[in-house]
Every structure is written in C-alpha cells, then in structure tokens.
Amino acid sequence: MNSTVVTTEIPVSTPVKLARIEVLDVLRGFALLGIFLMNIEYFNRPLQEFGEGIPAATFGWDYAVARLTEIFATGKFWVLFSMLFGMGFVVMQTQAELDGRPFKRLYLRRTMALMVFGLLHIALLWSGDILHSYALVALVLMWLPLMSIQASAFIGTMLYLCPAFLLMLSSLMMPLLSKTELQEISKDAANNAAEAAEAARIYSTGDYSQVIAQRWQDFMHMLAYEQYVFIGALGIFLIGAAIMRSGRLLDLKTNRPFFLRAITVCGVLAFVLIGLASLVSGQGMMTSQGMLEQALMTVGNLPLSLFYLCSIAYAMSFPSMEKLLGLLAPAGKMALTNYLTQSLIASLVFFGYGLGLWGQWGRAELALFVFCVFIAQVIFSHVWLRYFRYGPMEWLWRALTYWSLPAMRVNASHTRN
Image 1 (cartoon, rainbow, N blue to C red):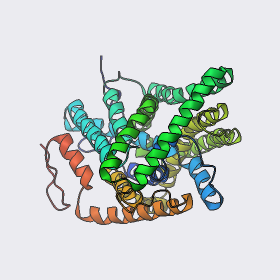
Image 2 (image 1 turned 90 degrees about the vertical axis):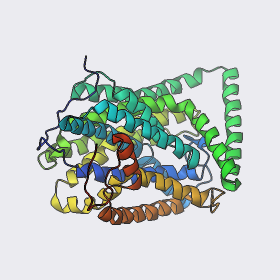
Image 3 (image 1 turned 30 degrees about the horizontal axis):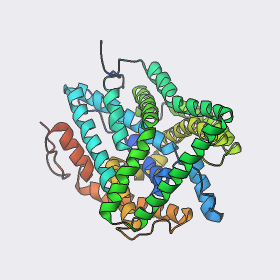
Image 4 (image 1 turned 180 degrees about the vertical axis):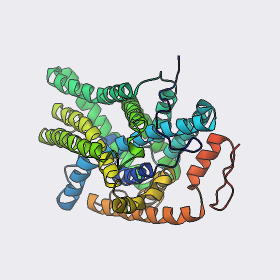
C-alpha cells in the first residue's frame, strides 16, 4: 500500500521545476502578522491564563483591541499557518517527484530540524512555540495512507472539529458535576492562579537562567493540551494538502468565481459561529458558558481562516492587487526567520533580563508595537532578499534538509547534492 498522503495532482506547467507560488508567500506574510498579534499577549501574560479570555480590568481602547484580536486573530492565524504547512508538504513532495529525489528521507530530515528549532525556541525565547507540534504532525502526515482530495478535506475537517466537540460535551456535563467535583475544579483553578502569579513575577524580574527554568515549567504545563493541538493541527494539515492538490491556487484568475463563492459561504459561517460565541461569552475557561464559547469560537476559526485565504487569493487574481499584496511576499519567504525574530524581539523588550516591560503596556500599545515590528520585518525582508536567496533560518533549514550547503548569495550558483 502506498504510504504517503498525497499524489502529484498539482497541474504543473513544466516537468522540470515547480515555480514558487507567490500567493503562498503572501499568505505566510499575512499569517505572520496575525500570529504576532495573538502571541504578543502571552509575552505579557502567563501561559497559565491561556483560554481565560480578556482580563476583567481591561477597558477603553485596550478592551476594544483585545476584543477585536479575539474575534479576528486569535486561533484564526494558527489555522491559516497550519494550512500553509500542509500546502508546503504537497509542494515539496511534488518537487521531489519531479526531481527524482527520495521524498521521505528529505522530509524526515526537514521535520527533525523543525523539531530542534521548536525545542530551542522554547528554551531560549518563548514557551508558546508551535513548531515542535508541527514537527510531530508532519511525522504522522508522511506515513498516512493515500487519500483522495475529498477524503483528505473531510477527514481533516472532522479531526479539527474533535476538540470543539469535546469542549461542547464538557459544557453540557458541567451542570451535572457533584459539589465535590466542583470544589476540586475550584482548587485546581486556585493552584493555577498561584502558578500564574509566580510565572509573572519571574518573567518580569527574573534573570535569564530563571526565565529559562520557568519556560520549561510552562511548556510542561502546556503539554496537557498537546493532544488537542496535535489532533487539530493534523486536521488542518490535511485540509491544506487538499487545497493545494486541487490546483486552484496555481490559477487564481480562472478560479476567481470559486473564490468569490467560498468567500461568501465562509464569511457567513464565520459570522454566525463567532457571533454565537460572543452571545454566550462566559467568565473563564472552566465554566459551562466559557467552554461553549471556546467550542463555538474554535469551530468558527476554520471558516474565518478560509475566508482570509480565499479573499487574498481572489484579490491576487487582479494584477493591481497582486502587486500590492505582493509586498508581503518577501516576509513570507522568510517566515521561519521572522517568526523566531518576533519572539526574540518580544522577549528582549518584555522579559526581566531585557527591558523588563512585562505587563506595563495595554493591548492597544501592544498592537501598535506588533504593527511596527511587522512593518520593519517586511522592509528588512525586501532588503535581505535583494542580496540573498534565503532568510538565515531558511538557509539553515534547507541545508539540514538536503544535507548540503545551498548557495546563499543571489549571484552565486545554486547547487545541491
């Protein structure tokens, strides 16, 4: 039995080289902005408070920005970025087949390198890393049995919805819990609050060694949710693989009517689901309302992410918008470098061993900081790629994947063993 999840169904125009797909780079660049908007909160807030919603003491512009981020960014750009990894899997396998290269060996090295990057990211910069989860999912993805595009999309959607279903089930079960069980939940919540307070103290005032120790402790805390992240990410990888294999992103102009229909359907679904989540907004994750809100929001994240993807694809089917949105492409080509750089900058600005600004800025100021850093990254990416073929981390990742040193400078010969 064939043991890979995809076949080469992408309509390739040349049998020699699969051209770089600019819309994917633009989507990566766009996703980088949304991911930083999500992550910046937890460079100023303990990860023990993950999922607890907007802090009660948030008002005015800070509340407005926090609420808009929750509705339009949190969870959505994680889904979009995960889709892009699934798409990248298809592109890499297709190119390996065209080049006559052994795909699994290359992809295994690529995945193990990603795992190392993720673990170093946790230890050195930030414990909210997603790269290690992507590496775990990729190890499974490459060994899944062959699926049709429809099966990949359907199974991927079902997998993604599993955590939301469990949250809904937990929401229904909460009122049935005994008094003793509720007391245990309250006790766990109190312990978690104490751990969060200690984490906040260390991140705001601790030295580098103390912060590293706290990062690993937080990572161990987040491992309790790893299985849900894994199931959801595997589902999204499969959806991304199905989208890429459909070939629609390779001919944006011809597929313009499809993207327009998808924008409408996904937009309506997202509006309904996220609207319902807002109506049942609860206080804290460990309440019946809070769980239902998170479940509805999780379900709504998928259509809103697809709405973003199809909107960009539709816009780029017009030459004028292609040129404008293409400004994000260099940042997307250096997505790994920029993702890690965001963590580096934020850790030096907010943690105690840096400027120590932990908790001193409101959400509006943090959003402004995110946009300023992102604009600087876009400009830097444009300048860097004038002279170099890859970002620094992309070069290292490619070297570890192909086990050879790629030519770095633009005017150098590009060879691989």
